[in-house]
Length: 152
Image (cartoon, rainbow, N blue to C red; front, side, top):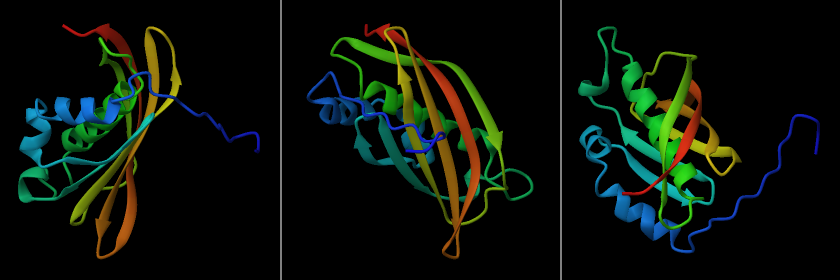
């Protein structure tokens, strides 16, 4: 392992975390509205994809920044939630985004993962890539702090 590599292995505290997340996805109305789906759920990491449509674009024909931000927020939130015990959840306390390239193409792929977990805060990172004619372009990165909450 070199100096810049972090090798962290996370363990879910809820043995049924995948089923719990799939159940919670039913209430993710905005996510469904924009057509985003989670494709991979694992301990501390979530991936998702969506087909790009006209409604996702801003005035210059690029993916709207709000769409990109939403994908990163969703993947980081569920990555953090995958590590929560039964009865706990997470909400976004802070979100910082760097837009790196215009979002162009047919699809967006997003990955969110946990960097560090504590009893009250979970630190996460995310990336979004666009796919155009088989070419993958890194369009945005984000970091977030998720606050651990008691589920109502």
